[in-house]
Amino acid sequence: IILKNKLTNFNNDKEIIDESFNFLKKEGVLVVSQVYPRNSTRISSLITNKDFKEILLEIENIVFNSKANPLTSWSETDLEQKISTSGFSNIKKLGIRQKETRVIKKEHIDSWFNGNFGEAIEQLNKNEVKDELIEYLKENICEKEISWESEQLIIISEK
Image (cartoon, rainbow, N blue to C red; front, side, top):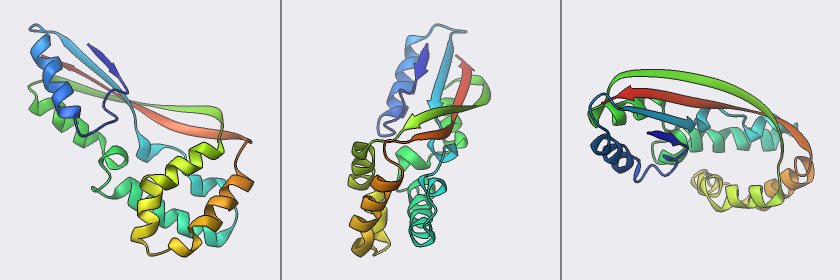
């Protein structure tokens, strides 16, 4: 079974892994390929304004390191543990760095700030700069070609 980015909703990831284990015959193989958000380009690295950069670094720290954000803060150890506790063994991991050119759209920025980024800025009590920060990002990184790095985590395991 190959699961490519199927575990992005970490509310039901364990269920998917368990179902895969139950479906596979003995010596069957599960391959999980998942984009690893914690090891991707950060928005803060794309801007030059010191004040906004500082705020974005704080936001990203919450989004990518807080266990309250399981969709973005998971680690390879978390995923490996979920796979092993489902009964899989002979677990092998591989990380593949990718570089691509992306164009960030205004809709992307809106969705970030309607989601995890918005929650983080609220947590930081910095709502007063939210609109200004969003406007700055839309003016400075939207509709431009950006070099984007990400990591694909691949885990191969056996039943």
